[in-house]
Image (tube, rainbow over all chains, first blue to last red; front, side):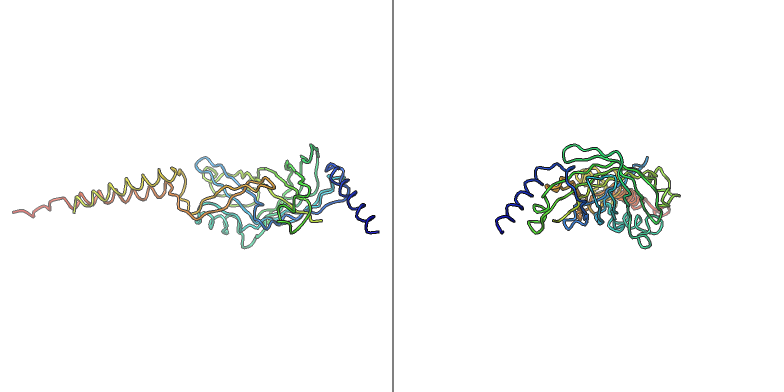
Length: 209
Length: 87
């Protein structure tokens, strides 16, 4: 009985290893809370007189990915607004303050994924247009952004030092928003602080088995 | 006194310029923490960690040069002969 069970387990593991990502049947939930603090969003405002850039590492949230039905991908990625950082402390205080991001009243920046479009697979990497709702400073807007998603099968063990086993997924996207659309100090001169904000996201989610 | 102020002015101007150049000629505001790029080898994600370090910007250079000009100006005042002082 034990031998049969062991053989069945080995056979299932071999089948899973031989299957491309597209052949994995069940939806997987990936958690983007990263204990290593690697997950981050970066931003860049390239104004005429000044370029401002920074990062945020307070990333959390989950995505449910069903590769058999990728258009049904859903979930929310959250960024803790107060984790935004720049290389000048005074500038950071201004940025988090009431006129700009008002993090005391709006502690989270979120992207709620409503689905994928134009899903294309190449090996273990997929590209797609992600549609969803982006929420910043209490203002929510529908957006559609390009994304690259890579499955790292069975890499969770290596990343967690063997504590957990499972898959990782790496999601990368880059898109531009206008800060004035979200009420982020719309009166501020755009030659000093660009209205366009380039946002890049590079995050890894874990799906323990 | 006049000579001392002028030497201080030149030292302040030269020293601040040298510090600014050696710290990487930062054309922006002074940084009090610096983003250090790192790489997570498993996921291939590049990320930054902030390190507490001062990198002078043009604002600090401007303040130092303004102070040097004030010292230079003061040196002229100290060297001036007071009118009516000599009889």
